[in-house]
Length: 128
Image 1 (cartoon, helix red, strand yellow):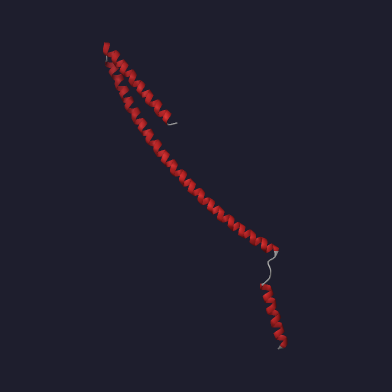
Image 2 (spheres, rainbow, N blue to C red):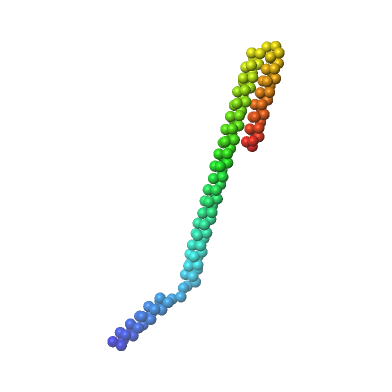
């Protein structure tokens, strides 16, 4: 019985000593590296969140600018079509005019054509 108790105590001491075993340098390094990788994963996640937010902001700004450009284009083409129509009418009047009326129609047609060219130039310079 005494021998059994001695063996039992020794087994218990070995068990306790095994549980309280100090970390080896390899285990310490591996644990430290695991912690650093976890920190990096967190930082990478935060970086991705910031990037996604920045991309969403840029897309919103792009969409707003594209919509504004579309409005300007529509306004410019509408104005150009109106001025082109007026120039076409002036040309038709010029073709049917004679004598003194032809000179007045010529001036009117030249001005209408000039108006179309100016509207075009303005539209092009505004789109740059």
